[in-house]
Length: 575
Image 1 (cartoon, helix red, strand yellow):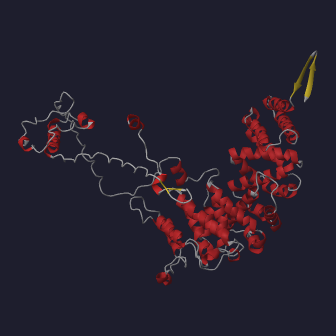
Image 2 (cartoon, helix red, strand yellow):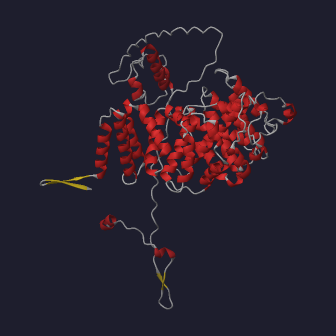
Image 3 (spheres, rainbow, N blue to C red):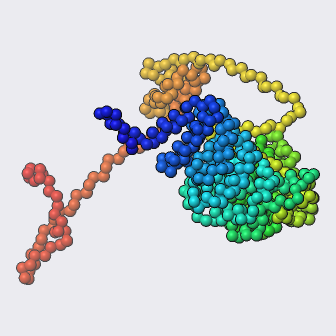
């Protein structure tokens, strides 16, 4: 806390607020020449680097400083010059604090403008990142994690140069695998996703480079080796955590490009004999559940991602432990294939030919085929031979040109695109639009509009003065003389209150009430016997006189002497 004294006044200045004020002054200063631009950039870099360890403890605070520079007049008027100076600073700077600020700015600017990443590759920044990642891992964890993110974002935007890939050796890839096996020291990244993403994007770069070399008329002299698959083939049992984490990442990932990166690696693992059993059986069960769920959840327009899932599903079922009994979720897989064929629904648009062909390829897996038709499934696939010889660990052979590996390697999606979900759309109440099947018959005319007739009101029924609907008189009834057996000759009981309210039922209602009254008059009343009086209570016998016996002077009494009769006091008084 700085104390500023001006005469008799004493004010305190917050160091954080003072930092932001100085940053605003630097970025708002006019810079008309390159010398003034260099001084402004140097002042911005020194100020943010000095505050990195004292004030800017959160990575978002450093990103805010980068955004201040991007939105300032310095950058808006001199974008190319500022990018060039900062890229050259990355290549020349050795201090970790300024390198952190430089890497943060390039990451923020590259995500907004992809040309920044492409220019970094042309300037040779990939080799510089390799050097920095190896050296600062144990010295500065914040910078190490930021450099990994920068390498990942730069490598998935633009294809790396052949000489850049050749500089990646087994030691660097092994170092990344060992980081994943070690305990995470970052609570925000407990599964080392930043390291996993670098390995995934390097695998994609190897696939693209090998596919391009197979069709390039002037291939490079040295063969290209996918070192990610090579090390997993040799030391896969020591790097099991990597396999577990990529399955977790696929289960949680909603970005399409991330899912494609994982599926590309899985395809190579399931088509390379040395890595058939790299995963544990329980992990394969989880992976199969994730693939089934995602295939059922994909909308119809996501054909590329659906095709990639199906290309991975075929070798997964044919080559891994899932091919051994007891077969896991065989019925669910067959149901999935029927749904993807579109045979159960004739109203929607049928699937595309590639989907049908890939579904049939999965259906030809040995343990999915019915026993009676097991010997007939020998048709060859055009772009992949699942039951053939496994792919070598090294570069692609010329005979594999146009195979499924090249098809999968070319599938890509822009970063940040989220995969749509049918399940989430239904949960949010959104309408899921399915493509309708095209019909050649003319549309049916709409049915004629139904004309509703106005309902007529019914006439009122004359009411009795006591509220009972008026019916025919009892004396004029033709059966009046035959009711002599009714002793009481009482009128029928009044109708219930509900019938009184519906007395306005017109002629039909009047007739119904009249018939009900006639039935009540014609029905004879049962003669009930008179009620008998209650039985009179019997009087208890009077007390017997006691006699005196002769010997001993003792008084003997009968059992009746023990009960004394009830005496009416009034009768006693009269007597």
